[in-house]
Length: 392
Ligand code: NDP
Image 1 (cartoon, rainbow, N blue to C red):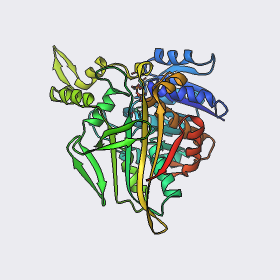
Image 2 (cartoon, helix red, strand yellow):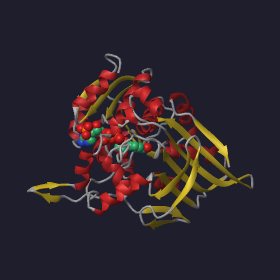
Image 3 (spheres, helix red, strand yellow):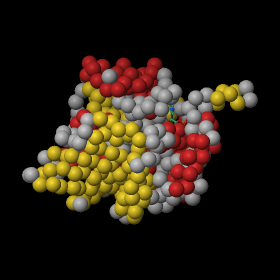
Image 4 (cartoon, rainbow, N blue to C red):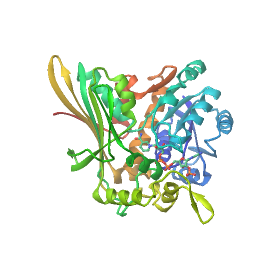
C-alpha cells in the first residue's frame, strides 16, 4: 500500500522497522535511514533478507532528506530520530509532498523547552501540500492521548481531571542509565514541574509533587509530577477539562544520581571549555552512559503506562483507569528492544499504518486525540500492546 522511510536507527527505530516488516501488507517497501549506517545495518541483519533497505542520512539537512525521499519513492516518513530533527524533517515532507509521523515534539538543541508551537505553525503548509502530519505517535505522547480520546468517546459526557501515570518497573542492573536517549531523558526530568488547572499552567520545583500509586502487575511506586508534552494538546482538545497532570516513577538511586549530576553541572546544555575544546556537559555524559539500545538484553520487569480520568456520565460521577502493561523480556524476545522502545515504536508504526490505510486521514498537522480512537485502540490489541480498563 505504501513505501515508508523510517529515520533514526536507535532503540525506537529498531522496533518500528521490525513492526513495519510484520505489516508488509501495509508497508510494501521499507527504508531505514540514520546518521550512522552501521546501526541501520545491524537492524537490517536481524530481519529476513531483503525485508528492508538502509541508507545514511543527516536528518538536519532538509535537502538531503528530500533527495532520499525521492530516491526511495517514500510516501510516508516516520521520524524516530531525535526531537531536534522534527522541523527539518517536516519541511522535507512538505517539499516532497509526503505524510509525516513523529513521537516527540520539537526541541531546540540550545534550549530545554518542549512545545508544539513551531510544529503546529506548519499546519497551513501541510494543508497546501495536501499532506498529513501526525504528532506524538509514541506511547506518551501517543497512546495516552488516544486513551483520553477513548475515555471521552465511550465513558464520559465531560472529563474533569486526567492524571497520566507512567511507571517503568524494569531493572537493568546498572547503578544509573536512562531508558531512552539520555540527553532527551535528562533534560525532561531535570526541568521544573508543570501542570494545568482551571485554565492556567502551574509551575513547581523539579520533583516537588509526588504520590504513591499502585500500578497493576507492578505494585506501589512513588510517582513524581513532571511536565510532559501531551498535556499541551490535550488541554485544547478534551472538553470540560479542569486539571491535567503527568506523573512518572523514579527509583531512589536514579534520583540521587540525577541530583549529584545536576549539582556538579553534568546536566548543563551550554558549551564549557575543557583543555582547549568546547564540550557540552550533557552530551559528554550521554557518551559515558550505557547506550539505551544495549539495555534491552539485561532489563527485567514491566512497564505500566495509563491514564486516570474523572468526570461525569449521565449526571453521575465516574472515574476510570485505562492502562497498558508491557514486559521488558517479552519485548526483547520479540524485537531485540526493551519495553520503553517497544511501547514507543509500536504506536509509531500504528499511527503510520492508520494514515496509509486512510483510517485516519486529513490534511494538516494533528495530535493523536483529534482522531477517532477506536481503530488505534483495536490496532494496539493486535500489534502487541493490549490494554485494560478499570472502573475506580
Ligand atoms: P536513540 O538515541 O536511541 O536513537 C536516535 C537515532 O536517531 C540514533 O540512531 C541517531 O543516530 C539518529 N539520529 C540522531 N540525529 C540524527 C541526524 N541528525 N540524522 C540522522 N539520524 C540521526 O533514541 P530513541 O530511539 O530512544 O528515541 C527516538 C525518538 O523517540 C526520540 O525523539 C525520543 O524523544 C522519542 N521517544 C518518544 C517516546 C514516547 O512515548 N512518545 C518515548 C521514548 C522516546 P546515531 O546512532 O548516529 O546517534
